[in-house]
Image 1 (cartoon, helix red, strand yellow):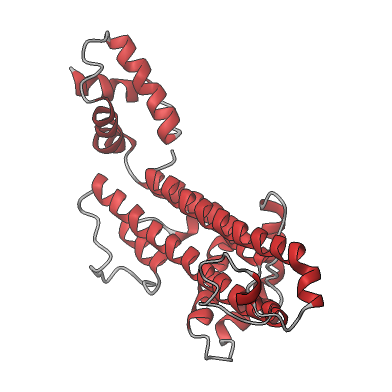
Image 2: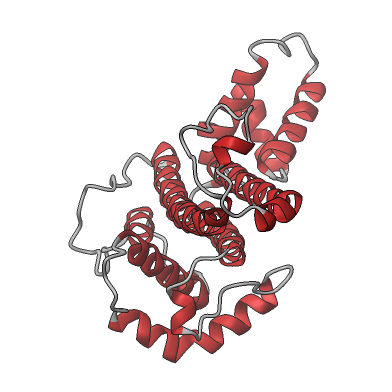
Length: 291
């Protein structure tokens, strides 16, 4: 089953990926189109050449300065996109906790504590602890990757810090090769930018590193989606989420249909919206809701 929360996260990643790719494409095409004029007239002001651009007075520089300005802008944008990607992932985790609490109201909120939570320092630990899902159900490489990506995010936020923490140094040293092997096997096109064994790579943000980050988080989010769903009652999910959404979408439009037709529509809805295959017991739950 794929939750709405997972689909929304995937949509957010797609939007960020499309926007980032668009920006990169446009800049590179600009550089191709104006390479000759930029090189032949380095002292020309952009204000004097791009006469129809409404922002010409906001960013008036010499042609020879364009490349350096692009480099600075690109760094700012890719850093910001990386931080935003990880923020969307943490938002997804919190949304999954809200989803689980819809199914089981006894699940604690993110702010509530329990003495049974041994490791409760980062968002992914907090969410899984409260839902009652063991981290051992996920492959170690996924959590090690999350540690790596989170520490990289922290490094970008605290950009004035030049030191690499002992935690990331140890992770790179002891698990870097294993993580490279894992993701080269599980990603459609292998790793394109991230090298988990390289300290300098940890401090860099490039187009390829951003794409790798998106792809790794897609898989991690899917795996977290699956283990949370397994920890919840399928009957409760159908009763408290799926049937209610189905009824809300149709809003009485199927009331006059025969039961077999209603079941057919419900089965198709579960498949298309949640990736959920229904067995006889599931169909019985739905029939009971409309009896």
